[in-house]
Amino acid sequence: MKIAKNGILIRTLAFAAVVTATMMGAAPARADGWMPQPYHTNGITYISGGIGIDEENAIKAQAGNYNLKITDADKQGQFTGGTNLVIRSNGGQDVIKVDNAGPMFDAQLPPGRYTVKASNGAQQEIRHIKISEDKPVDMHLIWRQS
Image 1 (spheres, rainbow, N blue to C red):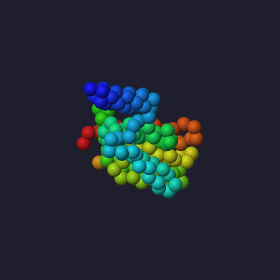
Image 2: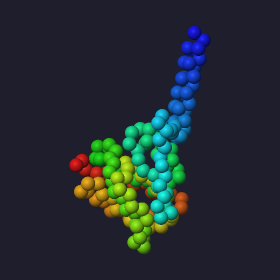
Image 3: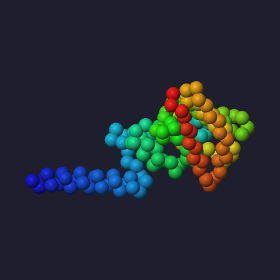
Image 4: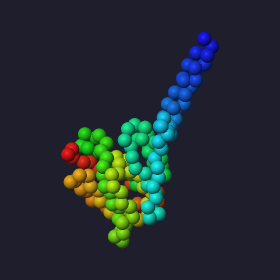
């Protein structure tokens, strides 16, 4: 009987720790250990993913490390993946090229002006952004259902 009570207490404490961490903005790691894998290209660090609530929370927990956040969704607000991204500097050089990104994509770019070219199936978006030292850019790409 004492062991059963301790088991319940341990599970209750573990649940409370997860709820508290989530409410404070720190997402726990998934049970299978998945955490966003940072990639490095041309001196730029980025992460991509967000399929399922565990990945979404893990990427949100890392969001403070990045100054560009791109989210892909359909018109109903449901996350979509499979977006191809090209981020080009103001000088015309491709700094990041990622196939099959999203639905959440975060990057740490040096301050400056950039062109983001995104495509999802036959759909395409081109956006011009300015990255500053003090304010992250939050971009939402809304795709039609295909």
